Each structure stands twice: as C-alpha cells, then as structure tokens.
Amino acid sequence: EPEVTQTPSHQVTQMGQEVILRCVPISNHLYFYWYRQILGQKVEFLVSFYNNEISEKSEIFDDQFSVERPDGSNFTLKIRSTKLEDSAMYFCASSIAVSGEQYFGPGTRLTVT
Amino acid sequence: AQSVTQPDIHITVSEGASLELRCNYSYGATPYLFWYVQSPGQGLQLLLKYFSGDTLVQGIKGFEAEFKRSQSSFNLRKPSVHWSDAAEYFCAVGLTSGTYKYIFGTGTRLKVLA
Image 1 (tube, rainbow over the protein chains, first blue to last red):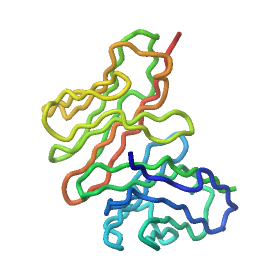
Image 2 (image 1 turned 60 degrees about the horizontal axis):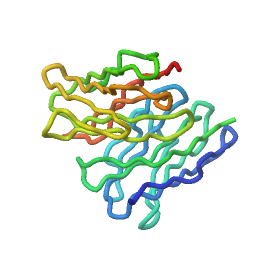
Image 3 (image 1 turned 30 degrees about the horizontal axis):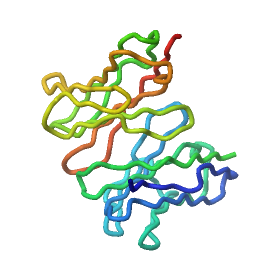
Image 4 (image 1 turned 90 degrees about the vertical axis):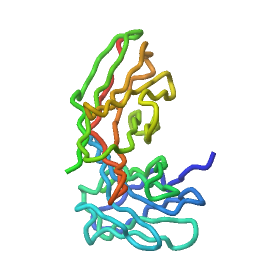
C-alpha cells in the first residue's frame, strides 16, 4: 500500500540553524500538508499546499517557515532560523482530493538545542 | 471556531474491561471524523474513520466508534481492552468546506492495569 515517507526520522540542530524536513507524498496525491506536535501536546495544523501554492497556513507558520515542492516527488518544510520552541514532531500528510482523507507520514522529530 | 474536545486527559482501565473514549466537536456541518492512536515517540496510526453512511464504524484492533449527530460526538469504544492498547488516543475532524485541514483534540492517555 502506498505511504507517505519522511526523512530524517530524527534531526538535531542548534538554535539559529536552518533545517529542511523532507517528505515524499503518495505519488498521485495533489494536496500536501504539514502538522506539528510539541511533546505532550496535540497535533496542530501548519500549512496546506496545492498547485505549487500555499492554500492555507496557521498563525504558527510565520516568516521563519517555508514550504516547497522542488520536484515531482518531494515536499519540504524549511525553518530558516530554528528556535528552542520549534522542537517538535513534524508530520507530513497528503490527500488525493481537497476533501479527501489525509494520509500521514511517520513524522520527523526535530530537536533544537 | 471549529474545535475538538476530548474531556478525559487520562483514563485507567483494567485489562479485559470495556473502554469508551469521548470526543465532541464543534463545527457547522458534519465533518469527517477520525480516531488515531499514538505510542510514545511514534507516529499516528489511524484506527477508524467516518465520512458518511452507517454511524457505527468498525476499525482495527477491535475498536469501534459511533457518530451521533445530535450530540456532535464520535466516541471510541472497545469491549475488552488489552495491555497493548495503552497509548495516547487522538480524535480528529476533517473540515469539509472552505478549509481542509484536520483539527485534533488534545488526546486521551490510556493506561491499562494488568
């Protein structure tokens, strides 16, 4: 069964560094999402992306964040200058239709020291 | 604003006992409804989902959930809990118009006593 994959599974970075989290959505999906889960808290929506544009973003998704689909298979989340509070699990998801079921990847645990 | 409420932060049950985890949502229309389970440090595993049709939904690992429109609820049930069910459970709604993000509840941590 097709699945969403994410790399790396765990990333450790120093405060102020840039990080790029990578996702490979399911191949025929058109809608892509990033969610974040701070340790011990709920999963929160960050951004949705369709047709090479951001469809919607939350208040968490400030100027330090950006998303990109650099080629036909990858979907990336970049954090320009990481802060301690960016430490979280980041989940990528994709869906075939705008109101279709979202399929979640296994997550990337980001630790900012 | 749309929201999902899981009123129980922690639940402890004995192995073999029945389980019900509560979930209520606030949304103007009928959303898509999901239950996910998460073990510590792990990703989200989909237990079951409701899009439309029969309001009693069967999922994996012996779980079921019932959608009650009048109560805006989607409670998760299991007749007999196993020690391996100890985990955190998240209810989520998928909004069906205007925006298609998922909104998650705050989770219920389940502890199972041997």
